[in-house]
Length: 429
Image (cartoon, rainbow, N blue to C red; front, top):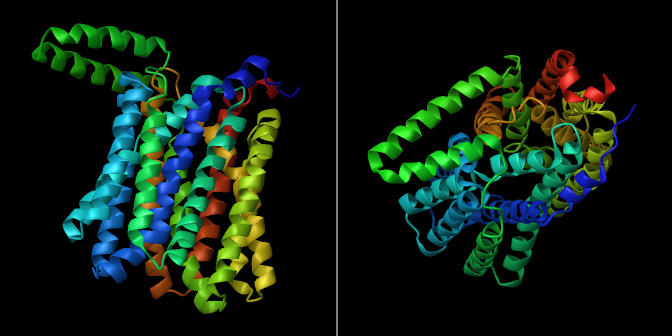
C-alpha cells in the first residue's frame, strides 16, 4: 500500500520556516553561481590580470572552506540553532563578496573565497536537518528534498544569467554586479534572522541546559564542551549503523559533476563547434528539465519509495554519459542532455531521501554535515581527475569515466537498498 502524506505534514512543508530555507538556498546559490560561473573567472583574469594558478587556488579554497567546515557547522547548528548559526555564517558570505569587490590582491581574493566557502558551509546541513525535522524520515522527505534541490538549481541558473545580462547592458561594469550580489547577501542575512532559534529535539534541549550552566565559568564551560563533543561522537558511533559502501557512494555521487564541470564547455565549444548561445541554450534545456521534473519526482518518491527512481536514474546517466561523445549532431546532443536532466531529477531527491533514512534522529545536523562533507569532496577531486583524463587519455575519457561512476553507483545502490529496504520505506515492506 502506498504511503499517504498527512495534512499535518503538508502544512509543515507550507510553513514559513520551510519557505525561509528555500529562500536562503536560492539566494546563496544565486550569489555563488553569479561569482563562480559568470563573474569571478573573467574578472580575475581580464580585469585584475592574475594568473590561472591564483584563480585555481582561490576556487580550491572556496570548495575547501565549504566542505571542510560542513561537519563542524552541523554540530554547531545542533547546539546554537538555525538562526544564530545561519545569520553569522551568511554574514561571512557578504564579507567575502565585499572583499572581492573592493580589493585586487591575490591574497585578499583567495582569503575572500575561503571566507565565502566557510560562510556557505552550514547551508546544506541546516537545510537537510530542517527538512527532515519538519517532514519526518518516512513521510514527505521526497517532496521536501525536491523543493530544496529546485531552489538550489534555480539560484545557480538565475545568478549567471542575471549577471551576464547586467554586464552586457552596463559595458561589463563589474562593480554593478558586485553591488547586486551584496544586496542579495543583505537580504540573505535578514532572512536568516527570521529562522527559529533552536531545533526542537530532546538531545538539543539537554545540551541547551548544559550550555546555560556553562556560564558559571570559562573552565567549566570548556569541560562541558569537551564532554558534549565526546558524547556526540559516541552517540554517532553507536547509532550510525550503515554499510561502509555508503561512504564511497557519497563521494562518487558528486564526483560525476566534478568530472564533467571543467570539460563540458571545452567539449561542446571545441569538439562540437557550438556557439556560446547554443551552449547556453543547452544548459537551459538540461537544467530546465531537471528543475521542472524535481517536484513531481519528489511526490512520486514519497508515494512509491526511492528504489526504482535511483535504479532508473543511475542507469540512464551511465548509458547516456558513456555514449555522449559518439555523436556530433547538436539535435542528438540536445536529446542526450535532456535525458541526463530527467535522470538527475530522479536521482537528486531520491538520493537525499535515501540518505536521510540512515541519519539518526539524535544528531541529525552533525551526521548530515559529515555526510555532506564526504559528498562535497567529490566536487574537489573530480575536476583534477577530469583534467588529467582530458590531457592524458582523450577528450571523451571524462564522459566515459562519469558513465562508469554512475554504473558503479547503480550496483552499490542495489546492495544498499536491499540492506536498508525496511528503513527506507517501511510501509511498503
